[in-house]
Length: 278
Image 1: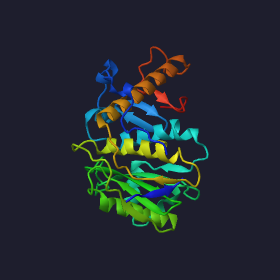
Image 2: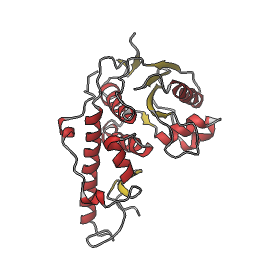
Image 3: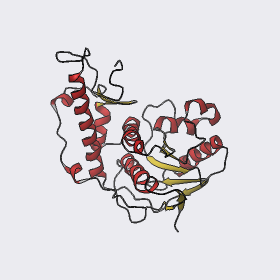
Image 4: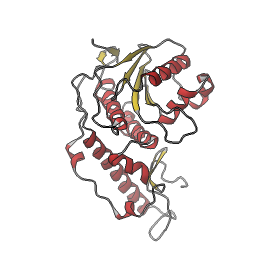
């Protein structure tokens, strides 16, 4: 069965060839403690631990939030007429746990003109556990069609959580949503790649489907036959982080701030609002 939403070219889910080069472990990285900041990128501050999880572990909330910031600022930004929201993992989790989702309205984006919402879904059951849970999946809400598409790389692990998030979003939007669990979602081969699948599927659905379509187009939301190169995706994410870190260091070295040569500040390299206090 084919599933469609309004609004198609194909972008491989495998990473670019450059992503397959090995990311060197720099001296700066080795000298940092796990909790030390590694890169400030707009509204996300990555720690060394976040970066380490991207190498070969279960992705943290912060690592996925970084990827959403990257897509938002470096991909989605080129389409000013697009009304697409990439909701951060922390807000998606609060939304799932809120008894009254309307109470979160002031903390959430204005969805009045939104066409689509991406939400990373986590199976953590306790609000008291930092970085809890054991599985990530992706919910894509087509507001204009009234459909919530669920992509689970370990299906049907997160189906109950995804249905709950879809229900909460439905309450916020004030309109019913039809829930569709995409049975043809690419499936992971280990227990650690779920977050990487979320990031790569989000990129594919955003860039290759939604942003390439014209108004009124019917877009197939099926992922049948698509393959995800999780290892290549991890390397691509690390390559992007290292490139932004180097750019942040370059900008800082040219500034007249206290962080110029000779400074021992623990403030990480920054991209976005470089003049803000660390």
